[in-house]
Image (cartoon, rainbow, N blue to C red; front, side, top):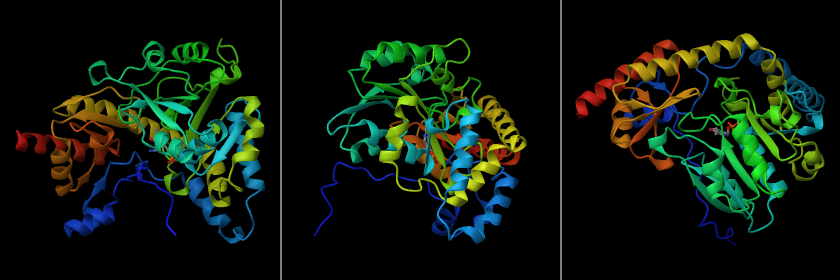
Length: 365
Ligand code: PMP
């Protein structure tokens, strides 16, 4: 007995951790810094760490109460109904649920290229097809309704990533509104705001609830995660905020107990720790501005907790930086073989990344 034919499916390539890289180079892990996966350099909120400790003794029970409390807290944050919050195992889990609830076999999604690989992978698992709209390096990866509509051909979901991974570009709420208006009733526009806390723009949840002068829409959903600004990437907690009419679909497509008790308790503690999020966002904003100024290569403007730099030969530069103890993301797998993506670290980490990159660029010159 064999698995089904998975030759069309590409495995997700998670960034390598410090331990793995240090072992390969036969070096002390403590001499490395990893700025490759857009993780939070300040770690988890201390309140979340405490909540995880306190929850340890009750994990013999299935998650229930914490799940409802967290959903209520998230709903409160975006002034939506609790039933509009689809809790999931990371943002990735929410992507799966949206595809499960939307796609009939052979139906398509429209995704940005370059872009986050998991949209396409997940759609394939759900027997869907993938179409792409291009974002251009020449145009600072600008995202406009007009360009996306040019590629649009009735797909069931249009995926927007704002801030966009790997560039950090964003799309305005009025452009999202226009896109939702000009696509058919059969299309859901999903705004992936995994990096939303770091952006200067407001959340697209405003379009769902008709905030700030926008009419309330029933064809827009928003994806969020606790992995980035909340520093909880390892706990796997994310969610989608969906239109009211979609509420019932969740109960039919979700994996039982979609998020663990540890994740829910940690999320509940972290969501109220504004101090930790503010510190994280402030650090990232300063770091991205500093990197734009100080790196001796073109760096695109970014509203995420990372920047994209045009370094010529990304594989060679990332490898040379790694040998000097700084792990960054070679963006060849995004179809950008000339670019690396650097996560905003603590001040010391960011400075080290900039100095190391500039040395490598001078050496390779
Ligand atoms: N969307 C985007 C654009 C991402 O970059 C990521 C993480 N790399 C995710 C969603 C999913 O994040 P997570 O599953 O950790 O919540």
